Length: 168
Image (cartoon, rainbow, N blue to C red; front, side, top):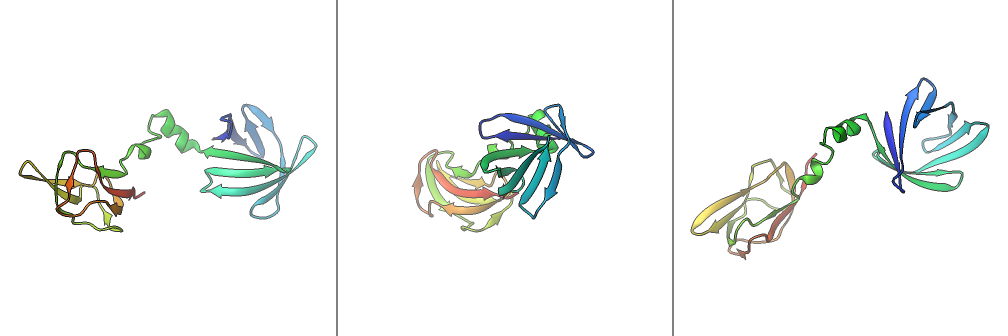
């Protein structure tokens, strides 16, 4: 089963039964001819439709043109729907994408550089606060994008120190 979500937010439930397509519980028997990778011709209820896939981002976000009208569509497969149902759909979105200073202090050392791939719990930065050295570690596997401080810099609580992208 798939769920299609239009630009307006309208959701459509899609399932397949043999050669038929079930959309929101209604069965359709289209005749679909693939012209090439992005162009299709459909016959449905004695009506002809020309469809072109204009944009296809990992089969998740599509822009489809049907008889000259454009539609932006988000596609969710059965696994994404299951993750949503279990309340796990946005786990990756909740992961931190930058490291902030947990307290005011002085940067002692930075053992990473932009472009470095780091594993979860790898040391990213050593921060001295109240005469104690605190090792700031990576919360997840990631690639270091930018380092916004240098050794001997004084930092404030909440200041962004390092930004990175998460590894899939």
